[in-house]
Image 1: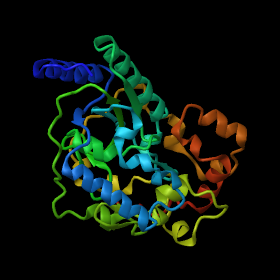
Image 2 (image 1 turned 60 degrees about the vertical axis):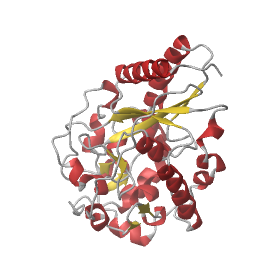
Image 3 (image 1 turned 90 degrees about the vertical axis):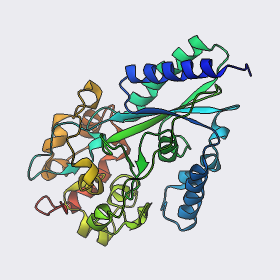
Length: 321
């Protein structure tokens, strides 16, 4: 490991964050491994969440490497955390089915991965001996906890990361590196006594602040549940949601400010998602699904699942807003 002066670390840290901003990421921040005591508390909270079975069928959440970021890259010392805004000035049309906002544009896994790889290649030009690895939320990393550690925002009671001026409408990415970088201050929670998200959840899935039980979550059941029929309690609470659920974010006071809307071409919604009719989805076949969802994060929801979800959806039902 080449030793760098504090000034060299600061210069590289500043330049790396600027390079990330040039890729459209905002906010950006840095953290040092192994993290602060609060990061360790977040890790312990994950283990309690797993022990209580809140992960439902998502067995990958129990991957041991998720508890220790250093296992993802040999010699990792620092981490660049980035947020990508997916809030756009558009709304679902009245009487239509609803899809979570993160799925409106191009698959964010690909977008974040490709852009962070460009940042990583830039880092290699500056420090040829540096190793790095890109992580999106499909990697076994505590992505929200590390984003909080890097100062991007705080984890709200609905378990999403909240930025004070950008709200919670952002996807996250991380670049682990063997370089010593100057860390930013971790964010502090500003949720206070607010319980709006907890009160608004139609199934009580937010069983206590910061704890979401996937077994009761509309997002889990519409995206991850592979059973032929949804549980009756989920069917009764589904409302118009057929792919994910934004209720806890829609009601969050931090999302009621004047938020910056993304003009990023890859974040713009596919028009059909804003005017999705129940009768149309019920007729979807594999060809229609493949055509509509090419390059979308929503391909995880198979054609039969779209039909299953749509069959239980009710577009005339209020969504707790």
